Amino acid sequence: MQTESDDTMPLRTSDDVVRVRQAVRARAVAIGFSLVDQTKIVTAASEIGRNTVDYGGGGEMRIEVVRNGQRRGVRLTFSDAGPGIRDIDQAMRDGYTTGNGLGLGLSGAKRLCNEFDIRSVPGTGTTVTIARWT
Amino acid sequence: MAEIPILRIGDCLLVSIQVDMHDQLALALQDDLTQRIVTDRARGVMIDISALEIVDSFIGRMLNNIAAMSKVLDAVTVVVGMRPAVAITLVELGLGLTGVRTALNVDKGLALIRRIIDNPERGDADRER
Image (cartoon, rainbow over all chains, first blue to last red; front, side):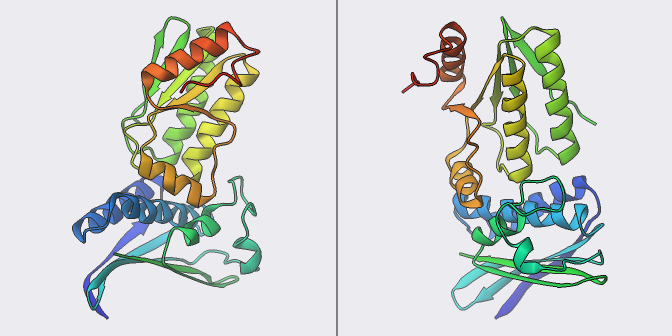
């Protein structure tokens, strides 16, 4: 697997979430995602990015364009140094929220991606990696 | 912060969301619309989302909230112009927008609002084709 581009963006405010959406859209268009695939990865990025800001106390997103043989993809890594998630299975359940959202962010984003990985250490922070392929 | 304009047409309010909204802007719109329903004595609210490239759970919640608040204030909300890719993504995300009435475009949306206002009992069953 090769990495064709690799950038990092701050995620501190809801304006940053808008910029993240735009950056993910631009990469998805550039590598030829269909309109539906673009919409899915941008929506997933919006969900996870909002979690980074609202629950993680801010952090950053790494955005990579990757190639595996003929296929290209967008891989996004969201990391924060927030309070972490004590029970990941519970956090991944539809409708579960500790805030005032709908509890669809993590579980919904997972359904919109081809790859999803979440690691969290209470008191240290959370890292979520998602990827979608052409 | 740029505001999203709310236009009045007769007893209806029309909002066309033309920008990629950050969360505070979405919350401000929700508050403004609720205020305007009361001050303008509006019976219908139409929200045009044809320019929106995504609807995530936050925007979805805003649409649900506006629909619920308008109902309490005796107004009907119709969301129009959702792009097909947005609809596909929204359902996969797990958000059905169950409390929100929708129509394909502004024309059909206005007709739906008019029918529900004029005929509140039949409004639910009698949907625009």
